[in-house]
Length: 107
Ligand code: FES
Image (cartoon, rainbow, N blue to C red):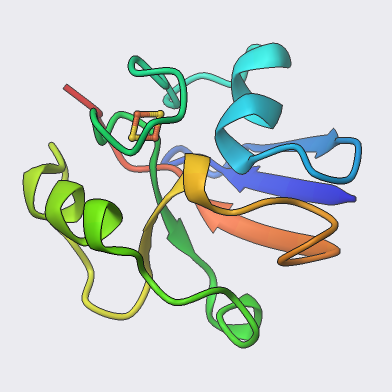
């Protein structure tokens, strides 16, 4: 599965990840800047906040209760449609390919 991380400066990090890997893990293990993943994927820190690009929103799992709470605590403003926690989306399971925008800051 594949993720394209679009940065605010226009650069893109394209990452290949095994099926089942979360967007957060894919970013952290490939040194993608701007995704921190402080809590290790427990939906408890919001430092894995991403904005999912429009064409990839369809078919994503519903926002869970913990995720919903953490999305209220993101450093960058929440986008009602596009904001998700990167640790709650599993590549290859929830999406074969996904493009996300990385927020300006996570802390
Ligand atoms: Fe902490 Fe996603 S890694 S909320």
